Amino acid sequence: MRLRTHLVTLVVIMDAVLQALADPSRRTVLEILRRNPATAGELAEALPIARPGVSRHLRVLREAGLVDVRQDAQRRIYTLRPEALTEVDDWLEPYRALWRNRLDALHTEITRGKKART
Image (tube, rainbow, N blue to C red; front, side, top):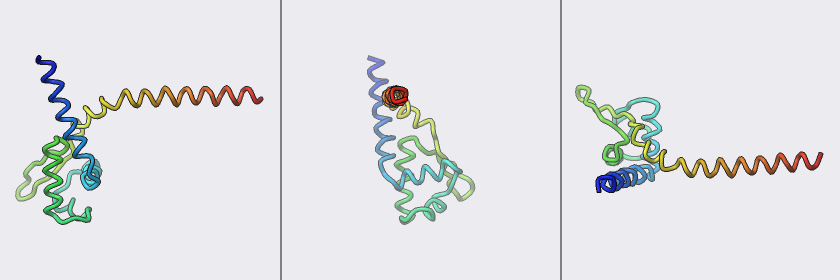
């Protein structure tokens, strides 16, 4: 039962992360934060949306575990939490392996074709 509960929790977390990543503005926020921490105001300057919209996006990203926030005097500084992407990365690995195998097979066939022509 414990393993099932753990798996359900992982699915819920991954769903929250994928839903957060589904929005282009949130992906832009993550790209900015990947390079350096930023305030909500700095993020608002980089996006074509009003500051309240940026705050809503930051809340979604925070709830999904993709960003952290810390208080620095009167400012809130947001930073990327790449660990939150680990579950998604782990889930994607079998699909990457599938494509690697298919591309390796394609490369082998192309090489065989070139050898046969020479």
